[in-house]
Amino acid sequence: MLLFFFLFVVHQIDIHRQGLTYARGQLFESTGLYGQSTVRILDPNTVEVLKQVPMNKILFGEGMAYFKDTLVQITWKSQQGFVYNMTTLEVIDQFKFSTTKNQGWGITWDRCKDELIV
Image (cartoon, rainbow, N blue to C red):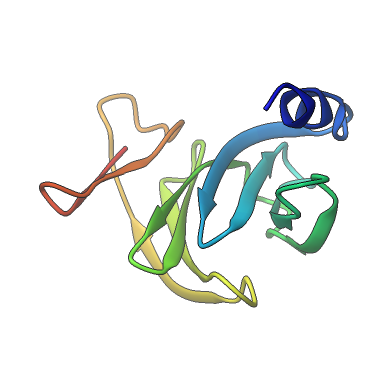
């Protein structure tokens, strides 16, 4: 576990990691910054980027969560969310959300209540 932590910490220090989730034997990562936000699949043993998909340059990617065999990601200020295919990282749905500050930072899935929490 310590080796994994070390590999992850040194994995691409030039990105702004916003979300990280592990599901179905894969690591999934979302990165932020306007013009640089991405969604990625990482090798869980080496943290090598296996697949990367850029987001629209006007969006700032934030948190990501596993949700019923999909990935759900939110954005910082645009109040947009995206649902991705876990294999292809293709956007398969979009949604709007609101919070008390109208910003998205993190997202998680409450499996007991079967709801996403932003």
